[in-house]
Image (tube, rainbow, N blue to C red; front, side, top):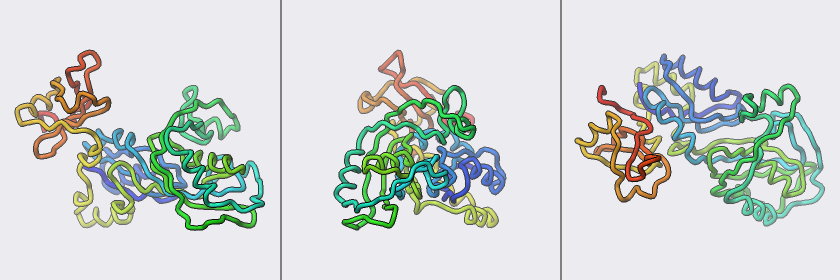
Amino acid sequence: MEGILPLYKPAGMTSHDCVFRLRKILKTKKVGHTGTLDPDVTGVLPICIGKATKVAEYITDAGKSYEGEVTIGFSTTTEDASGEIVEVKKVSSAIKRDEIERILESLTGEIEQTPPMFSAVKVGGKRLYEYARKGIEVERPTRVVTIHSITLLDDRDIFSGEDTISFRFRVSCSKGTYIRTLAVMIGEMLGYPAHMSSLTRVQSAAFNLEDCLTFEQVEKFMEEGSVETILRPLELAISHLPKYVINDKVAEKVKNGALLQIPEHLKNSNGPIVAETEEGQALAIYSIHPNKPELLKPVKVLRNEQE
């Protein structure tokens, strides 16, 4: 069994919970997820099975898109709806659409974020949430992330409410972006405490919400003996990476982990490169050699000589 299973992650489960359940359903141990989604978050969670676990990190590193809701008026310990209320400030006056859109536009591009205390970021060898559960607040490193686009998903011109205001948005962003923290930043720029009241991941690398299957659907395919038909090829997971198409003679060398002369069209690449056959089968991941810039060095052989 080999391939990518685009799973629809339900609320209330961690990414690890999803892996554990799929190992039981699929009756295989070689199952891995492609980046942590908080328990409250639903949506796209590509799961790598068999040999496809070798490319999990490249899905994790690829861009993501989310649709979420920010609620203005109170903040929480976890920056989402599951936390305890920290600060309350009633929204006493209406907020205009153009004010929100100006703020969203200002958050596009490279921005700095400080990871929330309830997160899996490691500080001093421990996860931040381990400190948070003990009531300990530690200094967190600020990180630079990229917001490719952020759009207001609401057609109102004036936003008003009793005590709080909520609105939905869609964001496409780089790895490492905390959408919870983005919601808090939006609130701060409007002059209010805020939190992320709901979130769905709608895209991860080449996988969209429409591609996803529920646990119940996967179980049905497994019972029918046709689960292979729902697994996507590992090549799809790395389709966003630059390609080096090689002939059969070079392919044999690639399977044995050989160095390659860098082709002209890849000389300016600074990330991973896929060496693939003329038929589109990915054989290995390469990168530019650290000491010999005219050569490509194998990072990971996906299919070796024995296969």
